[in-house]
Image (tube, rainbow, N blue to C red; front, top):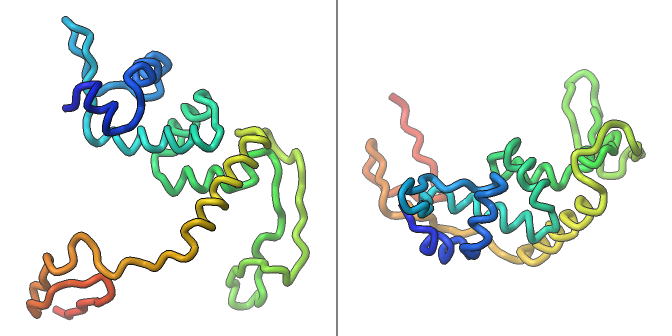
Length: 179
C-alpha cells in the first residue's frame, strides 16, 4: 500500500487532485484510515491514474472520464472509444465490404467502394469537439512513433526455457512440441 504522497509522486498527480478525484468518485483510494482519514492506494491503481491523465490531456472533462472508465477498463477499449466516430452520434457507412459473397470474407474499404457519412443516426456519447481533439492527439502520437522499430527482446528473453528441448524462449521463435 502506498501513502497518498508516494502515490502522488508515482502517478504524477498532485495530492490535492487525488483528494478531488476521491470526492467525485473518479479514483477512490484502496483504503482510508478511519482515525486519521489518511488515504492509501495500491500499486495496481497506477494504470488507472495513467489513463485518467491521458484522457485529461486529450481534452475530456472529468465527467466524461468517469463515464469512460465505468464502461471501459481495458486500454484498447478506450482507444477504440475515442477513435470510433459512432460515439459522436454519427456513422461512417461501408467501412468494410465483401468482395466475394461465396467466401463471405470482410475486407476493409480502402477506396474500392464509396463510403457514406450519416450524421445524427443515434444519441452521442461524447461531443464532436472532444472527439476531434482526441483524434488529433492519437494521430500525433501515431506519427511520432511511426519510425520506431519493434523490440526484438522482451522481459522474458533468455529467462524462460522450453520444457521439451531446453532452449531459451525468444520473442520471434515458436517452440511447438507435440505430445
